[in-house]
Length: 595
Image 1 (tube, rainbow, N blue to C red):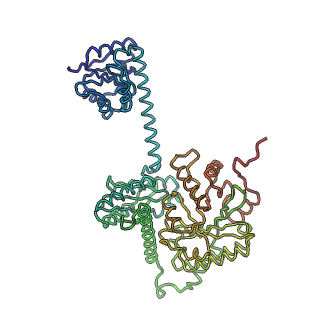
Image 2: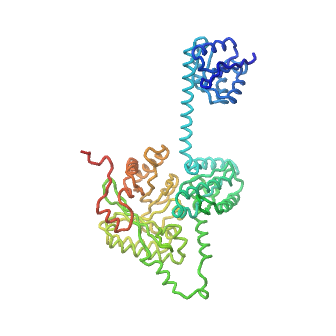
Image 3: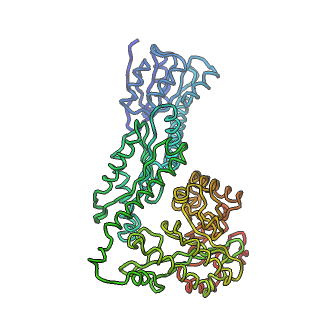
């Protein structure tokens, strides 16, 4: 039978019904019932074949399809499946000649919203069924869209729209498994921007965000569609290269990307040159697992960054003695490290359960030529400090800190001193001796037994020491603490805990996101919290400045926090004054009931 298309009483506000029925008599009965029940509220288009219905749905929007399961070109439940595969914008109501419970359930399983028996569905019932089916279909689509959006947010970075760490690790694991069955290799490039903090500090966070988006775009433009560009957090990106024939190709692409990121860009009205250090790793040669390969790429990035700094230092080294103005080098270095040039930034840590001081973070601060003070551990400090000066600065920092320990009420009271040191100092031959001297000063001056610890990011720890204990840990000069940084990672944490005796783990305040954050964020945070509790490793959270953050973290199990909510960071004199006035926050369950 040829198709008999007809439109009944078109109305732009009416329900658009596509009637798929090859029997003319049945089609006319349905049309009459709908006319009587709805008047102008329904617009009907009729076709006789499934192929015609699919074509109609592709070309014109419809709200609902009334579908007969016995058509010239399709029969049975397959008819619903074929229709759903081609068009999912309309609800589907199945019509059959007799009631069959099994068939009705199968139709629902294949995407139909409702089921009717011919001859039993009169006007009012037919109309209610159509309206119900449309609402059900719209609700299902909205839920599906919300699920997809939630899944996307959980696996992608909000700023750059790139895959995040979770999605990267999943794809990396799949790529490693595929590579093990083929003769191809997996490439991983760890990209770290060179001056991102300076852009943020000097030009503002809007320019910093624009820079991250610019880097994401350039990286994406220079890789294949089958590759993955991900943002780990902060200024760190990773490029996953799959189906690579030779390891050399990975290193060639690293050079191309480095060149692409060295081109200047105008961002928020400022001329900015991104610049990046890139480390390359090839699996399975450099790592048999996803975590090991990521750690290898991270370590290669640090080697690249260090090599570049050393090369730049050579190019900017002072002229030979025969050409340079006469001066006393020792005097110059000692002056650069004099006490007057150094400061300390103190951030007290509070035991929120006991309501008292549980530690102090100590950050040595060094001056820039313009007089601004920056952390000694920052890249900017490294760039202005000549390699020959490091020993002098190290001596000046620890000498001044020993005097502070003897004089400062804050440091005398602290059960724990946590030091944030530059990467270049962690393997310095003089560090163990300086730490031991400081530890002995703590024993002499502190009001009680105090611990000394050094904080290191897990990636740097893994790359630097390759499973061997730092000398200052092996000889018990100081404890080892991990700083998970801006993007906490379970895989890096587990790898570090596997090889090193960690005494404390420091995490940012946004470890679990805001209260009521995504389930993925909270699940990761809860996993880290339970793991640290099980291993009896102290958990410290920094930058807590709002009560909602403290409550959120307390619910997860955090008991040691620091930030403006408790005591504002500053000099030892300012912090001591704040401590004298008491700590201003306690968990809600410990507060006295209001009158």
